[in-house]
Amino acid sequence: MDFERSASAHPAALVDPFGRAIKYLRVSVTDRCDFRCVYCMAENMSFLPKQDLLTLEELDRLCSAFVAKGVRKLRLTGGEPLVRRSIMTLFASLSRHLDEGRLDELTLTTNGSQLPKYATELAANGVRRVNISLDTLDADCFRTITRWGELDKVLAGIEAALAAGLRVKINAVALKGVNEDEIPVLVEWAHGRGMDLTLIEVMPLGDIGEERLTQYLPLSIVRGRLAERYTLEDLDDRTGGPARYVRVKETGGRLGFITPMTHNFCESCNRVRVTCTGTLYMCLGQEDAADLRTPLRASEANDLLYAAIDEAIARKPKGHDFVIDRRHRRPALARHMSVTGG
Ligand SMILES: C[S@@+](CC[C@H](N)C(=O)[O-])C[C@H]1O[C@@H](n2cnc3c(N)ncnc32)[C@H](O)[C@@H]1O
Ligand code: SF4
Image (tube, rainbow, N blue to C red; front, side, top):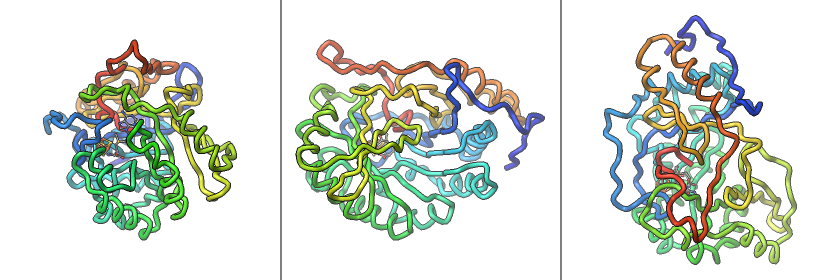
């Protein structure tokens, strides 16, 4: 696909009203998934009709428009990005921006189940790091959390990623009464294999048919418990993202905490998200969104698309206001995490 589709081959960079430069785009390439994690989806989900989805060519065009406007990091997510048919063609086409120096990083977040099949190809397409979600090393607990997943397949996926030379970060959602006692085991397992581990607080997205309050475990509590067992040394690496990192002195590994509920990370936010239907969300925690599919399809040139992106970024809010407490039992937002991606 031709990168320079319009008269404005070098369109204006993206800076929001609070002076934050938008350098990072997360793209949900499908809302479908081969798992049904209890905090993410209801067991009986209805998915988008296929005709509503952007084609892989349209996703490439959309991502490339953001790259032209200064985005330096692209993360494909979902749903499960690796269950989208022919998804490797999108990685392959986007890798030209890495080769040509326009993009610093092309990466993905995955549940790992398809990595035995794809790890080598991902590495060949310029992917250097991958985030793999894994909340437990206990096969029964894994089945309880993911409903449909098999631990062995994910562990094989992690091995395949490491064997392909990818750097792996494990993401684990901390769940009250489910995996909270296992967190030190996860720390030692991940660090023992040279992988970072990031712990995530449950966010109130989507009506998933479970009592959100029963899942929510503040990471301030988890961190306090870990600090009784290990020496946690604060690190400065912020990467513009929501995670705060520590070095666990005893293991030598990095441990991240993503705490949307107990710590507000919005002031350094450099990212926006696009869904598989081309809806741009300027903030994970707010409903305001912009339709990019219409301008994308309206014209072969990118001018309308650039104008729609500019107009949306001018509305990027200062921050989110998630709340989980006894007065807020409804999800703060109706859409599921699998729509906007994690
Ligand atoms: C929505 S998934 C999409 C990518 C892929 N399917 C995976 O699981 O890694 C991205 C991340 O969001 C996390 N996640 C899903 N629902 C969440 C919720 N309600 N609160 C916090 N994290 C959530 C998942 O654990 C995962 O690490
Ligand atoms: S967290 Fe990922 S693997 Fe689990 S249901 Fe959601 S999209 Fe699928």
